Amino acid sequence: MTASGNALPLLALGATVLCGVLAVIGVRVYATGRDRRQAIVDRLADESGLPPTRRRRRFPSVDRTLRGTRFGRRLEMRLAATGLDLTPGEFFVYLLAAVIALWLIAQATLAPFFGPIAALVAIWSAFAFLNWQRQKRIEKFINQLPELSRILANATQAGLALRTALGMAAEELEAPAGEELAKVSDKLAVGHSLDEALGELAERLPSRELVVLVTTLVLANRAGGTVVGSLRNLTKTLEERKETRREVRTQLSQVVVTAYVVPLLGIGTLLLMNRIAPGAIDRMTSTFLGQLAVVVAFALYALGFFFIRRFAKIDV
Image 1 (spheres, one colour):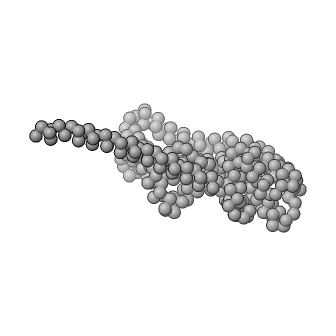
Image 2 (tube, helix red, strand yellow; image 1 turned 90 degrees about the horizontal axis):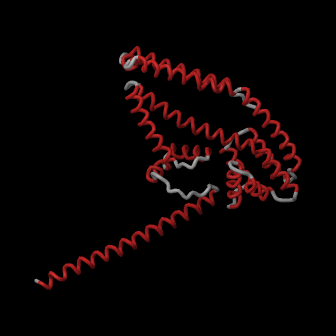
Image 3 (cartoon, one colour; image 1 turned 180 degrees about the vertical axis):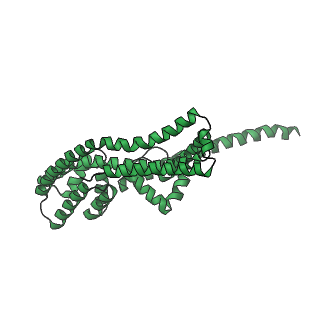
């Protein structure tokens, strides 16, 4: 009895030491596996032309599920065009959290009727932000096109091949042109044709200026002739278009601001009315006619925003 009693502490001590050793080994294996996985992800990112990332991705299960759907693939392409460091799963979860938060806030501060409206506004605002970010990236890329055309002209005049000139431009230019040209160079390095690589670039960042540049490079590559003269003329044309676009954007800046101010004034008036007479919005939306009036008002504000933006959109 005494011998067995003395053996129990030794067994407990041995079991504790064994568990500690196994725990250390498990942590070591986990850390090594995570580092190897990140190295594989970075290598694949380098081969696909995407910038490697060191931060840990959130919501991987949601991301895998979304990527298997058509909506997820379209969302992934849209996020790639914006240049944001977000996965489809992260964007979806953040959007869902914003929708729920705005629903509850609108329901608590205004009336239960405004909860679904706030959720719809949140969804629209999220995708409008993606479109704005994509358009902003396109505009920045367009402003870099004259410099890109000049670099390609100088490189080809020096006797370099067009593929080499594209790689040189990717190293010299800043983002987004440098990042996009790096993707083109990586695709050329793994066997894609120049037509395919430049065609995908034009699809990611659609613009008339880029289409003209891509067409010039593709035709010159197919014909086998020199592209120096064409690129010199294209550089001058792109510089002129850049100045014209800047002048048009300056002239229309007041109209663009008006498009955003008008809906905000309506929402501000609604909040002010509820502030002056607490519960007025709740009483107004408690009847069908009040709800209809609110829906019609929001629809008219949306139409006004759409038409003002439409009139202010001038393609140069």
